[in-house]
Image (cartoon, rainbow, N blue to C red; front, side, top):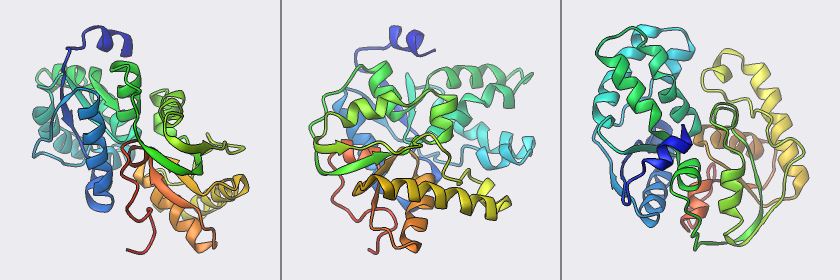
Length: 260
């Protein structure tokens, strides 16, 4: 899908930016950083007024009808762009599931297929579609990168953020022993299985702490909120930041989970 989308890429693609709920509510800086990166890569960016939930919570709990109600206005708002880009692999992955959500629907089935085929997580889009790596940011600290589950396992995102971070002046990337291990967030998973989730995030932040890195970077606000909160409760001093904030040179705000 990426090869086909890249082959059809306009010189200055019109991108619809889907901010996502967690970014809108908890970390707006990530939305502005994503916009900045897209514009630096030569894209024309529009942020539609329809910035609803992608439907992932209802889909994961088996409520197909609620997912459809949430997804229809999103599809109508974003289907007309050359590409749709998100600072979240899990929400991008949910849109990739829309053809399953609307299977057999004569109206929204084709629209869902069209939207899914041109929806990308930001680091994947910059690297795989735009072929862009002209990062001009600086960030003087050691950092470790957490591979969020949906981005890694569904969308194949692993090398892309690391390749871009390697261009950041002053950044030293130190790998965890288990960077691909889930942090225990999983959206509704942490609510349904609180004790299991807590053990998972404890193991994760212990792995982070073992690296000695000063900053924890990831591509999911949900994962970062989960890990930052647990690290703070355990007394660890690591700073949690979204990958877009570092790449866009917008990491001068308090880290995720820090007092403001």
